[in-house]
Image 1: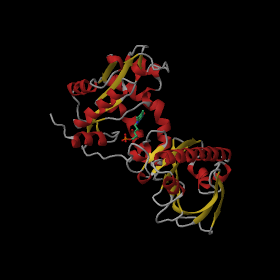
Image 2: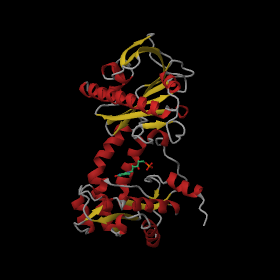
Image 3: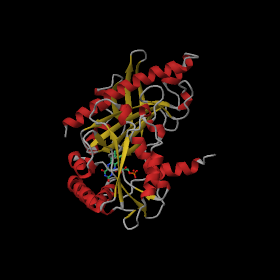
Image 4: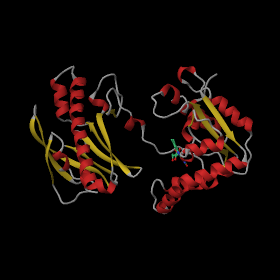
Amino acid sequence: MDIDPRHVDEVLTTTRAVRRRLDLERPVDNQLLLDCIDLAEQAPTGGNLGSRRWLIVRDQAVKDQLGELYARTALPFMSATAQRLRGTGHPQERVMASAEYLAQHLAEVPAIVIPTIIGRHDGNGRPGLFDSVIQAAWSFCLALRARGLGTTWVTAALEDEARVKEILGIPAHMTEIALFPVAWTKGTEFHRAPRHPARAITYFDRFGSTSERGPAESLRFEDGPGVTVEIDVEAAPATLWRFVCDPKVATAFSEESIDAKWESDERGVGAVFVGRNHHKAVGEWELPCFVDACDEPSAFGWRTSDPANPGARWRFDLEPAAGRTRLRFSYAIGPGPSGQTVAIANHPGKEHRVLRRRLAEVQANMQRTVEGIKQLAEESR
Ligand SMILES: Cc1cc2nc3c(=O)[nH]c(=O)nc-3n(C[C@H](O)[C@H](O)[C@H](O)COP(=O)(O)O)c2cc1C
């Protein structure tokens, strides 16, 4: 049978967390759920052991107890956060309002499905067992979506494990993995979610090593090779902002950066600073740096030498991450001439080695810089 990847891709890209669009009125047949569980059971399983056990809850009294439990464990936090974010346009605003809705209506869904696995997931280092359940649970969600049903991957309802086990009679040797409120969806049109593009989060051969094109089997200048480092900082993006948009800060941490001076008073896109650097093999050099991104408090970037044909591009991204900030610092070589093009020309046949060595040096300095910024930001809170 030929598989049309467009249909598969549609399911893979539009299986969203459905909460407000769950149809609480339309009954769901048990056989439909069992069909989806049969499909989910085709997922890989470590050692080919069938250790997954599924629970379908239809009894209203049991659903009421689960609803009360979810409301008790999650609703205070969800309602307070939904209230705080209302009208702010914050990326989590809609998610929180919808999560609050689900926590208020859990007992009204036609069915609740809970995948469990034999064994205790208590950090006992048995990935062959516990990593056998997530993929089956997700296959279940995909199978629902393909049939016009929907759900949300809920874990907050399982936090009080003792009470969950008590309500459902789950033996102590089992682990509950997720709780799925299942219903027909109101409408079947769902959209792709905004996510990091693969190029930004996929590394080649070495952790942190990026490629804008390609890569070929070895590093090539023309592919736009680069590196990315990341660190989680216990501070809000606004607290980090003044450190990431001050190029002088790196001089305290990077072994290469000695100085940075703004050419003008202006600081936004188009502003220029001159960076002075030192390298034991090259000596000292200066480079004009042209700010090409200044989006407070989420992105600050610049390009070196020639804004139209830069020698390299540098960028900080600040992403809110559950009360913290995920600070990402990335660097890409080219496409214009730089010390790297000179080194490559001077070492024929050694392009890969020249680039690999340079990326490793830059990555180490970038790592020192983000660690330094983390320290400054956390101290200044
Ligand atoms: C491990 C995990 C736990 C989750 N726990 C909850 C939860 O307790 N309650 C809830 O409403 N949503 C929960 N979600 C759903 C996420 O909020 C949702 O996937 C996220 O907002 C992205 O939305 P999307 O899946 O539609 O792209 C959970 C998702 C995952 C993967």
